[in-house]
Amino acid sequence: GESSGDLSGSSLSLSTDGSVLAISSKNNDNTNGVSSGSVRVYRNVDGFWNQIGEGINGQSSNDKSGNSICLSEDGTFLAVGAENNDNNTGHVLVYKNENDSWQQFGNELKGKNVDDNFGASVSITKFKSGGIGGTENLYIAVGSSNGYIQIYTKDLFSSPQFEQIGQDLEGNIVSFSKNGFSIVVGNTIPKKV
Image 1 (tube, rainbow, N blue to C red):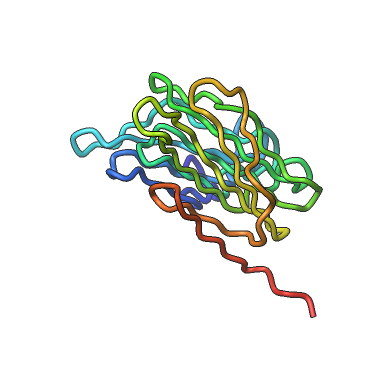
Image 2 (cartoon, one colour):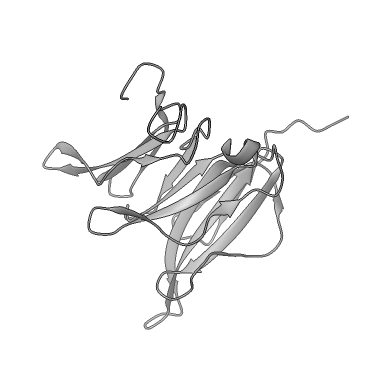
């Protein structure tokens, strides 16, 4: 991390081949505010880890951006959760590496209510459907500490924004399988008696 208390390594994600590594520092102070959080991505070139582009900073103070992160299998896309954003409503932003610069990809995904902590967990995958000439889509699953999970998809080339698939799932922890055909959902929230 850049300084004491950054909590560098609070969340980690690695591409399938191990060549791209994302590291979050959710308590990082930067130009966007105290504890806005930051994520840095590195590529292994001949045994040396070189940073890809600039750090990705949270939007405002106490966002703790990077509490959850996930790289796509090839390391091209990165999802960043900031569960404290906007009075703990939480949000997730997706970025694409374009010529070693991280650019926001698609729209902001936001929680429904204050204290939802949307973005407590996040998982992304991309795959092509329909064989040769088929559509390549990015899929993202986002968990909320308030006990719901939403799944979104976006065409990699044409559609302007993510669209939710189906209804909310119950849970707060989520992970896609490598091929995107399966999803694992966990729930660490105690049931009320």
